[in-house]
Image (tube, rainbow, N blue to C red):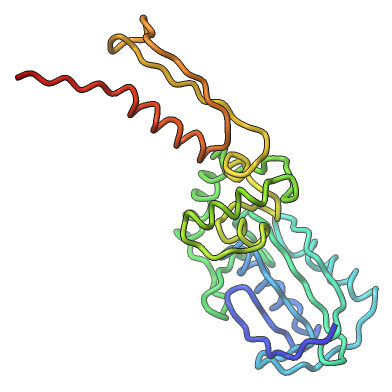
Amino acid sequence: MMVDFVMTESETLELKSSLSEIKQGLISLASMLNKHCRAELWFGVAPDGKILGLDANEKTLRDISQAIAAHIEPVIYPKIVLQPLAGRNCLKVEAESWQRPYFAYRRAYIRVADEDRKLSASELTGIILKNNRDALRWEDEPCGLSIEQLVPEKISSFLARAGLPADAPASALDKLGLLRQRQPINAAKLFFASSPIELRCAVFASTTSATILDRHDFTGDLLTLLQEAEKYILQNIHIRSRA
């Protein structure tokens, strides 16, 4: 594949001229994952974007994989490929993972613009606490469905109602924060799955549930159920006036 644009280092992209910079490259990889849970690292491209290329083969890929396994904790499973840029072989390492914090060579780093900064003890504690809170939330867990098993029309309808531009399902879910390791989370299933969820609404005679005056069950996705619940409430609010 030929690429005719100039890459620029950012909070999710790091460029290294050669494999001799592998230690700093792995530090950047961990720091980007700590900041954004995703990272892209290139060898054979100078920091100013100039494509230098490198001499690499399948053994090189294995060596990089082994270095990542040996020096980054917890374990990550990046995609490592040789990719031609402007006719020269370069090496691309791409990773996504949510098990923060990540350590490179037994130190934790965070990405700030295009630089890697050591995390302080308080910052490290904050990441651990936030990650633990997020891990306990049911809606943030993978739902077991693929993107293809969701309903594209529901995604398109949601984007239109939210005033967002039309987009491909995978891209839209990513921008909405509804993917984890490229898989939909439970929140996405509630909004966009074809299998309906159930909601039961009821009217009680008093502040207890002892006597039920009316009850209705609804099925659908989350947005549909919110609309039905709102209509049911409005239909059953009785206002009395006296002269």
